[in-house]
Image (cartoon, rainbow, N blue to C red; front, top):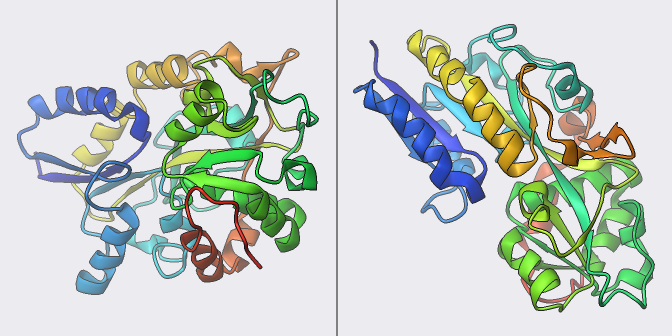
Length: 318
């Protein structure tokens, strides 16, 4: 077996459980090495990719598993550089519902393992003075000024919301949303601020947190911003790299774990979709900017805006 190196930045709230799945595989594969990135870890994956590109001209891992969407949306990172990776189209069983989310890139070098929705949650005990938001566009209205909390201005959890609004309704609406919203460090803090401390009537959460209860969950009618887990395999990587993905991340056991534990849409067609993703008999609508938008989007400007947000304060932007 050849040595396999993995960059892993997936569902941070489930990392301990993820490490158990990966660890079981590693027990029987001595030359298997995984490096974890994301919340709570010393380094962000986007920084690692940037360092690799600067030092080596390419990513150094055989496998990349990532919900850090910046690396796939930024031409300074991997967007447009997919020739680094092997064509893995057709290597995994991908259900039609995943394809319908719009998250799949039209290139064979990127595969979608599963998709996590971001949803609107309302604390009805303290929301009497506002209407219940039904869409992302509603969150741009003046009545929600300072009423919305969410986590991760520097993570996909926060950036996916702002980018989705920008994609659907333009920069002006996106900036209005950012002026209305208050960001905290992580989504778990947003949940606590809304559900437990009752400091905000509205929060935006990943499904894994929304399921904890105490809040009314609203699937936005214009689409629940989607956070896909993207996977790439280095061109020339050992054949066992694909075996790792098929056995672990795309395996039925781990796919079922994501569906049951986190209300994530699994890619494997033999894994049941969590009924919590259905509203009035229909699966929630997912939203992801199309590939043409991603290619033309001014990501440096967007990153500068998001990185400049001051946590805990109503935003004074633009």
